[in-house]
Image 1 (cartoon, one colour):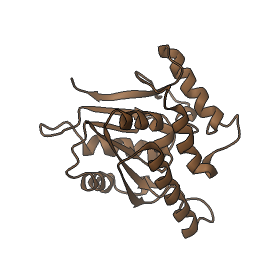
Image 2 (spheres, one colour):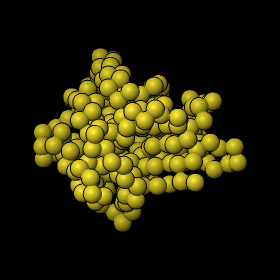
Image 3 (cartoon, one colour):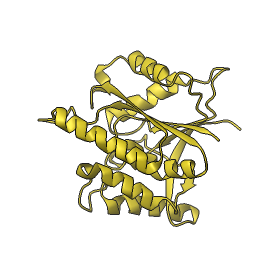
Image 4 (cartoon, one colour):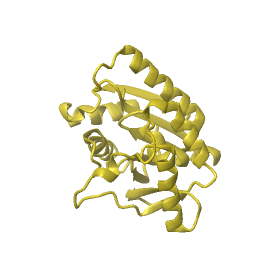
Length: 221
């Protein structure tokens, strides 16, 4: 059994980025933990306590759908992680994962358009820097539809690790539907059709029906 840690800036990123891979880990007997750094909605105009509670319920339901063992929700400001000292984010991750000893970590890609995603990646790399007593053998970064692909710069997400999730794509869709108010109508990328098209595209790249793609930051054998 492997211990898997997913660190996401916002609830729903875990589903969009690696939801089907999470479900596959659970089916294979691995234990998956999720750390979410912000409430995901407080930056929106008119957001209130009811919106925050609704988002927390969606997170809980999505986690149950995927089989996540434990969810920890932090309270950093949504879409304003650049207003927080990086050290504070790093120390929060270290404190919330103390004693966990993950083997594999999934998190955001540093070249993402969203500033919260960028800083989450930096904080994870710092919190789990490769010291002699670090348990982490693999760190993989994921893409988040309607964010990662909108970064039009030379530095972009470049997939070099693929997971066959053909048997888990519907479970991912069901989990994403827990965040119904985050879904959009096609051709918006954050739609049911968009999620399946991306997974189908990555699947074609490795000869399967559906796949999730990642960029390797660390892999020790």
